[in-house]
Amino acid sequence: MSIFGQLPEVSVYFSKSIGLPILDSLGKKIGTLVDYSLDFEEIYPQVFAI
Image (tube, rainbow, N blue to C red; front, side, top):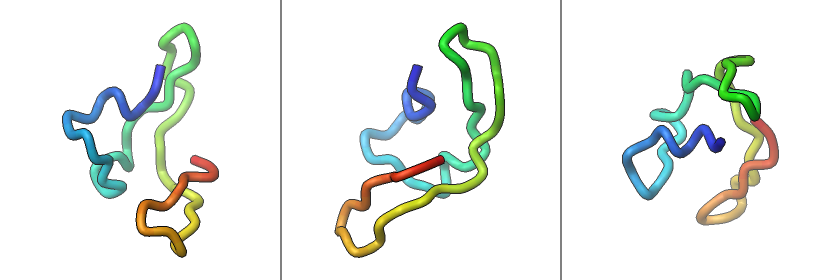
């Protein structure tokens, strides 16, 4: 399950996704999204890690 499935927008705003729960394959909460690792040289940066 993608954490981004919890967001209502098609575009993902990083500020709105911080604090979302991270779930395992069974839907159990295993953490909270607190940071990203991005390539800021792109217009639409790829997320390398959460």
